[in-house]
Picture 1 (tube, rainbow, N blue to C red):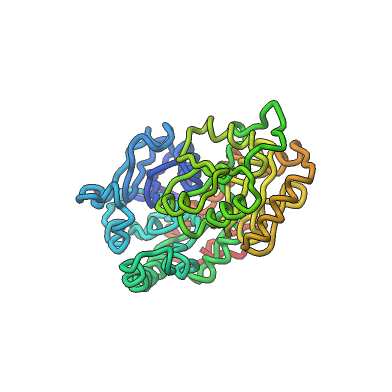
Picture 2 (cartoon, rainbow, N blue to C red):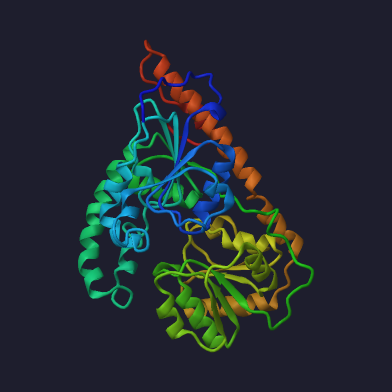
Length: 405
Protein backbone atom coordinates (compact mmCIF):
# COMPACT_ATOMS: atom_id res chain seq x y z
CA UNK A 1 0.00 0.00 0.00
CA UNK A 2 1.10 3.56 -0.56
CA UNK A 3 3.02 5.74 1.90
CA UNK A 4 0.81 7.53 4.39
CA UNK A 5 0.96 9.97 7.29
CA UNK A 6 0.43 8.58 10.78
CA UNK A 7 -2.76 9.58 12.56
CA UNK A 8 -2.33 12.07 15.44
CA UNK A 9 -2.78 10.95 19.03
CA UNK A 10 -6.13 12.73 19.34
CA UNK A 11 -7.64 10.72 16.46
CA UNK A 12 -10.67 8.58 17.35
CA UNK A 13 -10.15 4.88 16.64
CA UNK A 14 -13.29 5.07 14.45
CA UNK A 15 -11.37 7.12 11.89
CA UNK A 16 -8.28 4.89 11.83
CA UNK A 17 -7.26 2.69 8.93
CA UNK A 18 -7.78 -0.74 10.47
CA UNK A 19 -6.74 -4.22 9.37
CA UNK A 20 -8.08 -7.35 11.04
CA UNK A 21 -5.97 -10.50 10.67
CA UNK A 22 -7.25 -14.04 11.28
CA UNK A 23 -5.48 -17.37 10.78
CA UNK A 24 -8.05 -18.89 8.41
CA UNK A 25 -11.76 -18.34 7.80
CA UNK A 26 -13.47 -21.68 7.22
CA UNK A 27 -16.38 -21.60 9.68
CA UNK A 28 -17.97 -19.72 12.58
CA UNK A 29 -16.19 -20.94 15.71
CA UNK A 30 -14.96 -19.03 18.77
CA UNK A 31 -12.26 -16.98 17.06
CA UNK A 32 -14.58 -16.00 14.23
CA UNK A 33 -17.17 -14.79 16.74
CA UNK A 34 -14.53 -12.46 18.16
CA UNK A 35 -13.71 -11.29 14.64
CA UNK A 36 -17.40 -10.69 13.92
CA UNK A 37 -17.68 -8.19 16.79
CA UNK A 38 -14.51 -6.42 15.65
CA UNK A 39 -15.96 -6.23 12.13
CA UNK A 40 -19.02 -4.52 13.62
CA UNK A 41 -16.76 -2.10 15.52
CA UNK A 42 -14.74 -1.27 12.39
CA UNK A 43 -17.14 -1.42 9.40
CA UNK A 44 -14.48 -0.14 6.97
CA UNK A 45 -11.73 -2.53 8.09
CA UNK A 46 -10.06 -4.93 5.68
CA UNK A 47 -9.68 -8.57 6.73
CA UNK A 48 -6.54 -10.62 6.00
CA UNK A 49 -6.38 -14.40 6.31
CA UNK A 50 -4.44 -17.39 5.02
CA UNK A 51 -7.51 -19.03 3.45
CA UNK A 52 -11.17 -18.00 3.13
CA UNK A 53 -14.06 -20.37 2.41
CA UNK A 54 -16.64 -18.00 1.00
CA UNK A 55 -20.13 -18.50 2.39
CA UNK A 56 -18.97 -20.20 5.61
CA UNK A 57 -18.85 -16.99 7.66
CA UNK A 58 -21.48 -14.61 9.00
CA UNK A 59 -22.81 -11.86 6.75
CA UNK A 60 -21.06 -9.30 8.93
CA UNK A 61 -17.62 -10.78 8.21
CA UNK A 62 -18.39 -11.54 4.55
CA UNK A 63 -19.40 -7.90 3.99
CA UNK A 64 -15.79 -6.78 4.53
CA UNK A 65 -13.02 -6.93 1.91
CA UNK A 66 -11.24 -10.24 2.64
CA UNK A 67 -7.68 -10.74 1.39
CA UNK A 68 -6.32 -14.29 1.16
CA UNK A 69 -2.67 -15.31 1.17
CA UNK A 70 -1.00 -16.95 -1.80
CA UNK A 71 -1.67 -20.37 -0.21
CA UNK A 72 -5.26 -20.08 -1.46
CA UNK A 73 -4.01 -19.77 -5.05
CA UNK A 74 -1.79 -22.87 -5.16
CA UNK A 75 -3.18 -26.34 -5.99
CA UNK A 76 -5.14 -27.74 -3.01
CA UNK A 77 -4.15 -24.68 -0.98
CA UNK A 78 -7.68 -23.66 -0.10
CA UNK A 79 -9.12 -27.14 0.49
CA UNK A 80 -6.06 -28.69 2.19
CA UNK A 81 -4.65 -25.60 3.86
CA UNK A 82 -3.46 -27.55 6.92
CA UNK A 83 -0.89 -29.32 4.74
CA UNK A 84 0.83 -25.97 4.23
CA UNK A 85 1.62 -25.26 7.88
CA UNK A 86 5.42 -25.21 7.24
CA UNK A 87 4.94 -22.16 5.00
CA UNK A 88 2.39 -20.31 7.16
CA UNK A 89 5.13 -17.93 8.38
CA UNK A 90 6.06 -16.92 4.82
CA UNK A 91 2.41 -16.58 3.83
CA UNK A 92 1.39 -14.44 6.79
CA UNK A 93 4.45 -12.21 6.35
CA UNK A 94 3.57 -11.64 2.69
CA UNK A 95 0.68 -9.30 3.50
CA UNK A 96 1.38 -5.61 2.93
CA UNK A 97 -0.08 -3.84 5.96
CA UNK A 98 1.90 -0.62 5.53
CA UNK A 99 -1.24 1.46 4.96
CA UNK A 100 -2.85 0.87 8.36
CA UNK A 101 -2.79 2.75 11.66
CA UNK A 102 -4.14 -0.16 13.72
CA UNK A 103 -3.78 -3.90 13.17
CA UNK A 104 -5.72 -6.34 15.34
CA UNK A 105 -4.82 -10.00 14.90
CA UNK A 106 -7.04 -12.79 16.24
CA UNK A 107 -4.51 -15.57 16.50
CA UNK A 108 -4.18 -19.17 17.57
CA UNK A 109 -1.51 -20.04 15.03
CA UNK A 110 0.19 -17.60 12.65
CA UNK A 111 -1.91 -14.40 12.43
CA UNK A 112 0.11 -12.54 15.05
CA UNK A 113 3.22 -12.87 12.86
CA UNK A 114 2.20 -10.17 10.36
CA UNK A 115 4.74 -7.41 9.75
CA UNK A 116 3.60 -3.82 10.36
CA UNK A 117 5.13 -0.36 10.17
CA UNK A 118 6.98 0.83 13.27
CA UNK A 119 4.31 3.45 13.96
CA UNK A 120 1.38 1.06 13.49
CA UNK A 121 -0.16 -0.32 16.66
CA UNK A 122 -0.46 -4.13 16.54
CA UNK A 123 -2.74 -5.65 19.18
CA UNK A 124 -2.99 -9.44 19.23
CA UNK A 125 -6.12 -11.03 20.64
CA UNK A 126 -4.56 -14.41 21.39
CA UNK A 127 -6.84 -17.43 21.65
CA UNK A 128 -3.77 -19.53 22.50
CA UNK A 129 -0.13 -19.90 21.54
CA UNK A 130 -0.29 -22.53 18.77
CA UNK A 131 -1.33 -25.54 20.83
CA UNK A 132 -0.28 -28.35 18.47
CA UNK A 133 3.33 -27.15 18.46
CA UNK A 134 3.59 -26.14 22.13
CA UNK A 135 1.57 -27.79 24.93
CA UNK A 136 -0.21 -30.46 22.91
CA UNK A 137 2.44 -31.58 20.42
CA UNK A 138 2.79 -35.04 22.07
CA UNK A 139 -0.97 -35.64 21.66
CA UNK A 140 -1.10 -34.52 18.04
CA UNK A 141 1.84 -36.69 16.97
CA UNK A 142 1.07 -39.72 19.14
CA UNK A 143 0.85 -43.24 17.62
CA UNK A 144 -2.74 -44.03 16.72
CA UNK A 145 -3.59 -40.38 16.17
CA UNK A 146 -1.01 -39.45 13.55
CA UNK A 147 0.27 -41.40 10.56
CA UNK A 148 3.85 -42.54 10.09
CA UNK A 149 4.77 -39.54 7.92
CA UNK A 150 3.20 -37.10 10.37
CA UNK A 151 5.05 -38.65 13.32
CA UNK A 152 8.32 -38.44 11.38
CA UNK A 153 7.96 -34.89 10.03
CA UNK A 154 5.81 -33.40 12.80
CA UNK A 155 8.49 -32.86 15.46
CA UNK A 156 10.82 -31.20 12.92
CA UNK A 157 8.09 -28.89 11.66
CA UNK A 158 7.04 -28.13 15.25
CA UNK A 159 10.62 -27.21 16.21
CA UNK A 160 11.03 -24.77 13.31
CA UNK A 161 7.58 -23.27 13.87
CA UNK A 162 8.24 -22.71 17.57
CA UNK A 163 11.36 -20.72 16.76
CA UNK A 164 9.43 -18.47 14.38
CA UNK A 165 6.46 -18.28 16.75
CA UNK A 166 8.60 -17.03 19.61
CA UNK A 167 10.48 -14.56 17.38
CA UNK A 168 7.30 -13.19 15.77
CA UNK A 169 5.71 -12.58 19.18
CA UNK A 170 8.08 -9.61 19.50
CA UNK A 171 6.23 -7.92 16.63
CA UNK A 172 3.10 -7.57 18.78
CA UNK A 173 2.79 -4.31 20.73
CA UNK A 174 0.10 -5.54 23.12
CA UNK A 175 -1.17 -9.05 23.84
CA UNK A 176 -4.73 -9.67 24.99
CA UNK A 177 -5.49 -13.21 26.15
CA UNK A 178 -8.96 -14.71 25.94
CA UNK A 179 -8.73 -15.98 29.55
CA UNK A 180 -6.47 -16.04 32.58
CA UNK A 181 -5.47 -19.49 31.37
CA UNK A 182 -4.18 -18.08 28.06
CA UNK A 183 -2.59 -15.09 29.78
CA UNK A 184 -0.42 -17.59 31.66
CA UNK A 185 0.47 -19.48 28.46
CA UNK A 186 1.46 -16.23 26.74
CA UNK A 187 3.75 -15.47 29.67
CA UNK A 188 5.23 -18.98 29.53
CA UNK A 189 5.81 -19.36 25.79
CA UNK A 190 6.32 -15.76 24.63
CA UNK A 191 7.69 -14.24 27.86
CA UNK A 192 5.17 -11.40 27.45
CA UNK A 193 2.54 -10.01 29.83
CA UNK A 194 -1.04 -9.76 28.59
CA UNK A 195 -4.37 -8.20 29.41
CA UNK A 196 -7.47 -10.43 29.51
CA UNK A 197 -10.78 -9.89 27.71
CA UNK A 198 -13.15 -12.86 27.67
CA UNK A 199 -14.62 -13.82 24.26
CA UNK A 200 -18.21 -12.88 23.36
CA UNK A 201 -21.20 -15.13 23.92
CA UNK A 202 -24.33 -14.21 21.97
CA UNK A 203 -26.70 -14.26 24.91
CA UNK A 204 -29.33 -12.36 22.90
CA UNK A 205 -29.54 -15.26 20.44
CA UNK A 206 -28.87 -18.20 22.76
CA UNK A 207 -31.90 -18.16 25.07
CA UNK A 208 -33.85 -20.84 26.97
CA UNK A 209 -36.59 -22.81 25.20
CA UNK A 210 -40.11 -23.35 26.39
CA UNK A 211 -39.82 -26.84 27.89
CA UNK A 212 -37.34 -28.64 30.15
CA UNK A 213 -35.83 -31.69 28.38
CA UNK A 214 -36.94 -35.08 29.67
CA UNK A 215 -34.85 -37.87 31.21
CA UNK A 216 -34.23 -39.44 27.81
CA UNK A 217 -32.64 -36.24 26.43
CA UNK A 218 -29.25 -36.67 24.79
CA UNK A 219 -25.98 -35.28 26.05
CA UNK A 220 -24.38 -32.85 23.62
CA UNK A 221 -20.85 -32.14 22.46
CA UNK A 222 -20.11 -29.16 20.17
CA UNK A 223 -16.52 -29.27 19.01
CA UNK A 224 -14.04 -29.31 16.17
CA UNK A 225 -13.18 -32.99 15.69
CA UNK A 226 -9.43 -32.92 16.28
CA UNK A 227 -7.43 -35.18 18.63
CA UNK A 228 -6.98 -32.89 21.63
CA UNK A 229 -10.70 -32.08 21.98
CA UNK A 230 -11.41 -35.32 23.88
CA UNK A 231 -14.53 -36.23 21.90
CA UNK A 232 -13.37 -39.86 21.89
CA UNK A 233 -13.51 -39.84 25.69
CA UNK A 234 -17.08 -38.51 25.64
CA UNK A 235 -18.12 -41.17 23.12
CA UNK A 236 -16.61 -43.98 25.20
CA UNK A 237 -18.32 -42.71 28.35
CA UNK A 238 -21.67 -42.56 26.50
CA UNK A 239 -21.07 -46.08 25.20
CA UNK A 240 -20.46 -47.34 28.74
CA UNK A 241 -23.59 -45.62 30.06
CA UNK A 242 -25.74 -46.50 27.08
CA UNK A 243 -26.63 -42.81 27.04
CA UNK A 244 -27.70 -40.81 24.02
CA UNK A 245 -25.00 -38.46 22.75
CA UNK A 246 -25.18 -35.95 19.93
CA UNK A 247 -21.88 -34.76 18.45
CA UNK A 248 -22.00 -31.52 16.43
CA UNK A 249 -18.80 -30.67 14.59
CA UNK A 250 -16.44 -31.75 11.86
CA UNK A 251 -12.73 -32.23 11.39
CA UNK A 252 -9.99 -34.72 10.52
CA UNK A 253 -10.88 -37.03 13.43
CA UNK A 254 -14.45 -37.70 12.22
CA UNK A 255 -13.79 -41.10 10.64
CA UNK A 256 -11.93 -42.43 13.70
CA UNK A 257 -14.64 -41.18 16.06
CA UNK A 258 -17.39 -42.81 14.00
CA UNK A 259 -15.53 -46.10 14.23
CA UNK A 260 -15.64 -46.13 18.05
CA UNK A 261 -19.19 -44.79 18.45
CA UNK A 262 -21.96 -47.04 19.74
CA UNK A 263 -25.59 -47.08 18.53
CA UNK A 264 -26.64 -44.26 20.90
CA UNK A 265 -24.18 -41.75 19.38
CA UNK A 266 -25.35 -39.44 16.59
CA UNK A 267 -23.06 -37.24 14.47
CA UNK A 268 -23.97 -33.96 12.79
CA UNK A 269 -21.49 -31.78 11.00
CA UNK A 270 -21.68 -28.03 11.58
CA UNK A 271 -25.34 -26.97 11.65
CA UNK A 272 -27.13 -23.64 11.35
CA UNK A 273 -27.18 -21.30 14.32
CA UNK A 274 -30.90 -21.96 14.82
CA UNK A 275 -30.34 -25.73 14.82
CA UNK A 276 -27.44 -25.32 17.25
CA UNK A 277 -29.64 -23.29 19.60
CA UNK A 278 -32.30 -25.99 19.44
CA UNK A 279 -29.65 -28.61 20.24
CA UNK A 280 -28.55 -26.70 23.34
CA UNK A 281 -32.13 -26.19 24.52
CA UNK A 282 -33.03 -29.86 24.17
CA UNK A 283 -29.88 -31.49 25.58
CA UNK A 284 -29.49 -33.04 29.02
CA UNK A 285 -26.13 -31.27 29.41
CA UNK A 286 -23.23 -29.96 27.31
CA UNK A 287 -20.09 -32.09 27.69
CA UNK A 288 -16.58 -30.62 27.30
CA UNK A 289 -14.14 -33.44 28.03
CA UNK A 290 -10.86 -31.68 27.34
CA UNK A 291 -8.83 -28.73 28.56
CA UNK A 292 -10.16 -25.79 26.58
CA UNK A 293 -8.38 -22.48 26.16
CA UNK A 294 -11.59 -20.70 27.10
CA UNK A 295 -14.61 -22.63 25.83
CA UNK A 296 -17.64 -20.81 24.42
CA UNK A 297 -19.87 -23.89 23.98
CA UNK A 298 -20.50 -24.41 27.74
CA UNK A 299 -21.56 -20.77 28.06
CA UNK A 300 -23.87 -21.00 25.04
CA UNK A 301 -25.50 -24.01 26.74
CA UNK A 302 -25.82 -22.07 30.01
CA UNK A 303 -27.41 -19.17 28.12
CA UNK A 304 -30.01 -21.66 26.86
CA UNK A 305 -30.68 -22.80 30.42
CA UNK A 306 -28.84 -26.13 30.25
CA UNK A 307 -25.92 -27.20 32.52
CA UNK A 308 -22.38 -28.04 31.47
CA UNK A 309 -20.01 -30.88 32.32
CA UNK A 310 -16.36 -29.87 31.92
CA UNK A 311 -12.90 -31.09 32.79
CA UNK A 312 -11.66 -28.98 35.69
CA UNK A 313 -8.77 -27.44 33.79
CA UNK A 314 -8.11 -24.43 31.58
CA UNK A 315 -10.87 -21.98 30.73
CA UNK A 316 -13.64 -24.08 32.32
CA UNK A 317 -12.35 -23.06 35.75
CA UNK A 318 -13.29 -19.48 34.84
CA UNK A 319 -16.76 -20.19 33.40
CA UNK A 320 -18.38 -23.28 34.97
CA UNK A 321 -19.26 -23.26 38.68
CA UNK A 322 -20.88 -25.75 41.03
CA UNK A 323 -24.15 -23.89 40.55
CA UNK A 324 -24.02 -24.14 36.76
CA UNK A 325 -22.61 -27.59 36.07
CA UNK A 326 -20.20 -30.35 37.04
CA UNK A 327 -16.43 -29.99 37.00
CA UNK A 328 -14.61 -33.34 37.12
CA UNK A 329 -10.93 -33.75 37.94
CA UNK A 330 -9.40 -36.51 35.81
CA UNK A 331 -9.62 -36.98 32.01
CA UNK A 332 -10.79 -40.61 32.29
CA UNK A 333 -13.88 -42.46 31.12
CA UNK A 334 -14.77 -43.38 34.70
CA UNK A 335 -14.57 -39.78 35.94
CA UNK A 336 -16.61 -38.45 33.02
CA UNK A 337 -19.16 -41.24 33.38
CA UNK A 338 -19.57 -40.33 37.06
CA UNK A 339 -20.07 -36.63 36.15
CA UNK A 340 -22.69 -37.55 33.53
CA UNK A 341 -24.58 -39.62 36.12
CA UNK A 342 -24.40 -36.79 38.64
CA UNK A 343 -25.65 -34.07 36.28
CA UNK A 344 -28.66 -36.25 35.48
CA UNK A 345 -29.52 -36.46 39.20
CA UNK A 346 -29.02 -32.83 40.21
CA UNK A 347 -31.57 -30.05 39.68
CA UNK A 348 -30.29 -26.83 38.09
CA UNK A 349 -31.95 -23.43 38.06
CA UNK A 350 -32.15 -22.22 34.42
CA UNK A 351 -32.18 -18.58 35.61
CA UNK A 352 -28.90 -19.06 37.50
CA UNK A 353 -27.34 -20.77 34.48
CA UNK A 354 -28.31 -17.86 32.27
CA UNK A 355 -27.04 -15.24 34.73
CA UNK A 356 -23.60 -16.82 34.53
CA UNK A 357 -23.63 -16.75 30.72
CA UNK A 358 -24.73 -13.10 30.57
CA UNK A 359 -21.49 -12.12 32.33
CA UNK A 360 -19.75 -12.97 29.02
CA UNK A 361 -22.07 -11.16 26.60
CA UNK A 362 -21.15 -9.68 23.20
CA UNK A 363 -21.80 -6.17 24.48
CA UNK A 364 -19.35 -6.70 27.33
CA UNK A 365 -16.70 -7.90 24.84
CA UNK A 366 -17.34 -4.96 22.53
CA UNK A 367 -17.11 -2.42 25.36
CA UNK A 368 -13.93 -3.88 26.87
CA UNK A 369 -12.17 -4.23 23.52
CA UNK A 370 -13.09 -0.71 22.46
CA UNK A 371 -11.85 0.80 25.73
CA UNK A 372 -8.64 -1.18 25.57
CA UNK A 373 -7.93 -0.23 21.95
CA UNK A 374 -8.63 3.45 22.60
CA UNK A 375 -6.26 3.56 25.57
CA UNK A 376 -3.59 1.53 23.82
CA UNK A 377 -3.70 3.67 20.66
CA UNK A 378 -3.50 6.94 22.62
CA UNK A 379 -0.47 5.65 24.54
CA UNK A 380 1.11 4.36 21.33
CA UNK A 381 0.79 7.71 19.53
CA UNK A 382 2.15 9.66 22.49
CA UNK A 383 5.21 7.46 22.45
CA UNK A 384 5.93 8.51 18.85
CA UNK A 385 5.01 12.17 19.23
CA UNK A 386 7.07 12.89 22.35
CA UNK A 387 10.26 13.42 20.40
CA UNK A 388 12.30 14.64 23.34
CA UNK A 389 11.07 12.08 25.85
CA UNK A 390 12.87 8.95 26.87
CA UNK A 391 11.02 5.78 25.89
CA UNK A 392 8.21 5.38 28.37
CA UNK A 393 6.12 2.36 29.35
CA UNK A 394 2.54 2.74 28.16
CA UNK A 395 0.96 1.97 31.48
CA UNK A 396 -2.24 3.80 30.49
CA UNK A 397 -3.63 0.61 28.97
CA UNK A 398 -2.51 -1.67 31.78
CA UNK A 399 -5.14 -0.61 34.32
CA UNK A 400 -5.55 -3.39 36.89
CA UNK A 401 -2.94 -5.71 35.41
CA UNK A 402 0.79 -5.28 35.33
CA UNK A 403 1.24 -5.01 31.56
CA UNK A 404 3.99 -2.91 30.05
CA UNK A 405 3.41 -2.45 26.35
